[in-house]
Image (cartoon, rainbow, N blue to C red; front, side, top):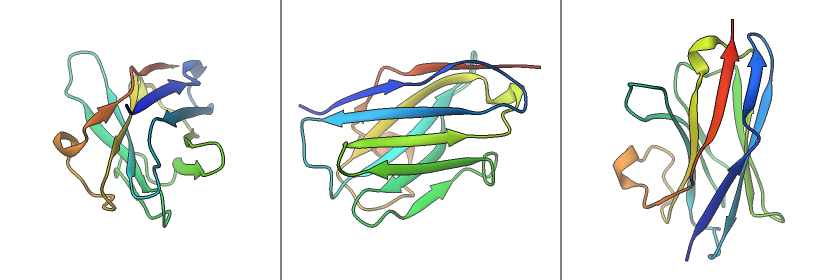
Length: 124
């Protein structure tokens, strides 16, 4: 049973930074794609970033390129999302997702495993 547990969310002022963590368990994730998604109130869930566990290839949404960095720690089975230069429009619940696939361009509906989410609030 795949389990994904996010942590690291919180309240931060615009221009600040946060690092989200996603602890993964229940599988060997070497051939998985791991993604971060977010959902703001009244909006659909959207892609933020993805990484292929075995090769470390990455993909980012245009809205976060140059500000967010996705990475993974193989020893800890954990994926991170470092978020810098945060803006109020980054406010959302952030979700970690996993899929047994090597692609980092999977559409959202291809991800089978999801965490419960962590709230990120950026004040102006």
